[in-house]
Length: 312
Image (tube, rainbow, N blue to C red):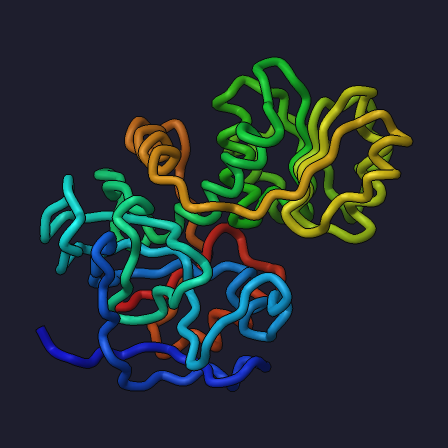
């Protein structure tokens, strides 16, 4: 195998111009790692937040840093302790976000964090799944404990996480409310939303007696969400740590969700994808060299579904 690869790296925190395409050493793998030849990598808001340094208090990176924690590719090397996997296996993963990511031709990932790529998806579709779908799964089911027949409000339903959340909530048997702009109403309805609130025409804060709110926006949206919940309801945010006093005042429970790698959940998600219960929506695909443009599009907040980098 060659010694070097093409990778997007940054040597300091900052704006999109810190992202550089350059030759870099192929990662060395630990005993419990696999080396994945990256075919495609997902682009997520956490990428540019880390790029700019917003998460420095949570994650201390050594520079240079390679972003990207959504990957689909092929195993090309196995750590000495790895069992159950073979060179050539097609896999997908949301790897450990504390390590270098997948904006590169190769990435080292713990074998415990990978799952077999859904057979029905191409590489780009598979790379669009792990982080967003795991975020929705963990927020709705693991933390939010969403049950069939309950009413759930999913903010920003046309986004990458939102579209998976709508579909997973509908599969679970919930009644799904979502916020979006009017131009995306048909998109979210076609993926399972029962009630669409066009935020340019109506105020979601007028809703009442919801069982669960999934906050993907934070700030004022989170603050206005408390009143929509019934007593005993739940709020899960992936943006802000919810205020405990506000939760107590409204007699609800509130939690922050920061998605974690989970191969078992990826296996369940793959089964749902292959069975046609949930579908992948790709907004756009950029070449690896276009990572900065992909970030620009993600930062705009206008993506419908997922943004992907085609690496190989």
